[in-house]
Image (tube, rainbow, N blue to C red):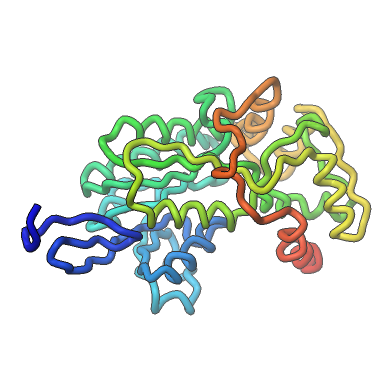
Length: 317
């Protein structure tokens, strides 16, 4: 096409046309205060993007960010709100929000419907979806079944979509502070079976690079595996070193874990969904995406423990 004819293309987060006008790509971010979102927002700001942050509580956005972002009030399970908030958006990083619920998979379905409505009605051409290892099974993996359903719904649309299949978040250890203070971590998984552990910041980096890279098209799956596979025994040894107290990994029964979740106040369906994420990946599961250079990210568990877990342990929260 000849110069001056108005052809548009993307390059590193900026839409360019052939008369050399620059139009900054509009990127929306959901759960901007989440474990991944809080890093992703700042990465995009540093890259020169002014992201649109979708949140149920606009007042929760850090004051120092407000000069660099736009904020829209939207509940990710409310299709009308999400559609209204994402008009004019070119790309979106979507997270199905995990909430304490009597029917978590129904909540995931509502979030999926809201995303599909926004993409369809607003012509959003690119989605980076924060999924999980195990979503490839499609069924039988507890809460991850909700992520699988979102993948399927996005794959049915005529858009460019990347599913980030993430490993086990380091930040999940923050839910176990009381147990760690008592010197143990409990799991229903085999103690010596290795699995991918990953820092949320590394997931954010992969998400940012994917959002800014306009060379990919179609449906993609990008695994995010962290620097190495770790067993629960190895994790306990690292925690022992870094926390300077003995931490023992203990394998408990499914019933013990479920009862513990119920005692902590989880509704039954939520407890079953959380337990199912472990039991569904326990027997002979092999991730669809093998570990490669492309899936391996740099942040190690030791560094994350020093930066985030040690202060959390000291805070007494």
